[in-house]
Length: 186
Image (cartoon, rainbow, N blue to C red):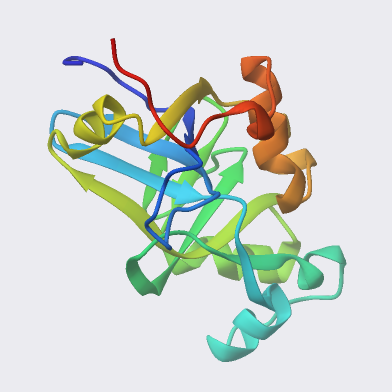
């Protein structure tokens, strides 16, 4: 399982996943290299919307449809820090380009721009992220903890959170209910 690069892929938690942070999650991998992996859980909204978040961080949020967007639990690492998965990439102070269309930004300037101009419009705002050390994700894959499937921006930005995991599963050609919660080995 060496030299695998899952950047711009989804991880689908297998039914046997016991970790409460990751059970029934769809994770978008933003970076994967020899040093580890960084991803964002994209199907677990929390009880907060952008209007509430912007109020808490004392940023103005202009009127518009973005105020009602949910904030997500992005993962158990740095829960006090915000991350914005967005399309298009744009020019922000601290952006990781996942591909030529999607970026992950952790600097406040993107939120200020969202608040004033409503752009970028296609965003997923999270508190926290999911992180794996060198070789850790590969080990979890070898233990059948995750399925992988190439990501599609339409799943991230066009579907409500509860439809993202089933849509990613459909890309594999089957549904979550068809998975066994026990892995078989030859």
